[in-house]
Length: 357
Ligand SMILES: *Cc1c(COP(=O)(O)O)cnc(C)c1O
Image (cartoon, rainbow, N blue to C red; front, side, top):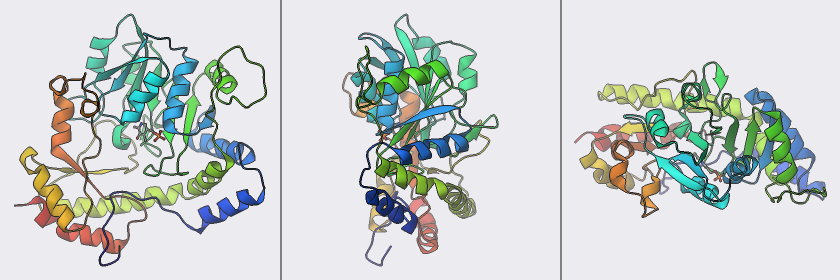
């Protein structure tokens, strides 16, 4: 931040490593899908402890690919959280499915298992759950109740662990995103991991329409480029540092909040949290006041996610009371590795005047 500058809500951390990686790839002359993509996939799979995966143009493309692997037909229903990026709704529609959005658990930002079970019908072909804001969803618990394939949207959760394993380990499919606001970025980019070899083989045969192979099934143009992969590779090398820096900032915020008698949002089951977001507790009446105050202090504070009923008129806010309550009582403050110590201290100094009348 310079003196006149604004502290952004999120910002990628780009070093000379990423810049050198781009120059290296450009020097090869060809930078569609090639050796950098393969190298990145190998490294990422090793980090996650997963067997197989395919990199894609975006997280949304990875979701659509998972649904094509499941052979979603028009009229098939796909359960999704209502408290999630709108692109997930559109990925389901693009695959030909009908999205069925479900409310959060009480006092949680993750989808409710009880409500999922109450909405499963004969037409339900897949359940998409999300590790919202990096907080693990309990896939093992859901699996006690149903055999329907689970797509775990871990787009915000790279680096989070549950039951001793990386999130995504217990679902049929795990989705990651490398969009510019995520844990690591390639500008855009996504990844689909598989717990089942057959699903992997099917995905491999349809994700790249340019692969020069004969196929009876429709193929898609979802392949990542070497240019994206080279940036992501450099970011992966820095992931441990990113996680450490996020934790450091979170700890500073925690002590400062404690001094004014407040506490951030804490999640139920979670072995390691990636510190993707820092959620401020607030009272409903204060939201706009706090947003205005933050703006005048030149700090970007945000409501972390806009629920799907804000975009789709056919959904009724009244059916999603838990989500609305969470939305109304939590704001997200800047938390990212490129935040300087000066900026962190500046934000902390404003805690009191931001949050206390
Ligand atoms: C970012 C995000 C997506 C979409 O990923 P893109 O790479 O932007 O397509 C989907 N779900 C969640 C939870 C996300 O955070």
